[in-house]
Length: 238
Image 1 (spheres, one colour):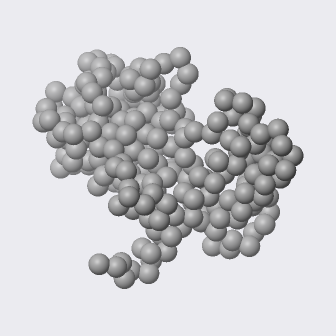
Image 2 (cartoon, rainbow, N blue to C red):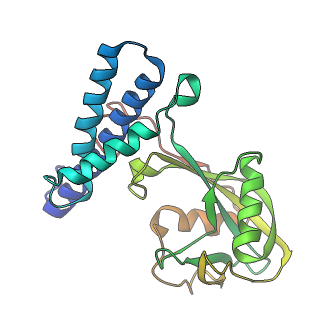
Image 3 (spheres, rainbow, N blue to C red):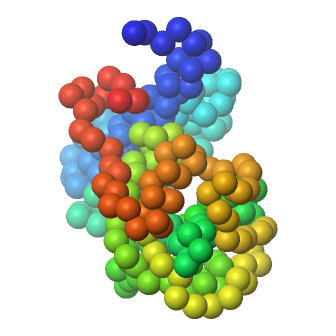
């Protein structure tokens, strides 16, 4: 059945524009990193100009703001590197759903947005993804934990919680020590929360909350991931 909610259709269309824009920009920047042809460089730069207009239309109400588009083009061009190092791929973030012996979930209130979420951060070079999860929990909350297994792999652009190409890997972890001690720059607040006593606002809880508490209780839960679509570029959602 077709969606009749104008606000939702507008939101989905902007998500489409953003995803298409970043995909085009990734192809163009990768092409600029490999080609020696002046003709191809001109064509790839033109694609970046189109992608920048699309991105502005997706994130602001007045897409005619050419200054924003020009700034985006300059940023993209500055990131172009030669050869395989210049192949554009999504950034990687790592999150940790940490449970304790009381079946509670460790949450932080992010200082940048004010929303509550499990500890998460960018993947660091030199660490495995699981090691990043342990590191982020320790640095952001003071809690020592061990990794149990992988819970989810999210496509941030597809799910609409990121404006840049991003994969988020989320691990189930078990607290093994430490004391609550929030990072002064990254956390406004933090704590252990039971399923029926969660703080607000929670970031995208409908997507991960039930699975998180089921996993903390020891239930077998499947890894969440974004399934392949039959027509990848025609829809923002399933």
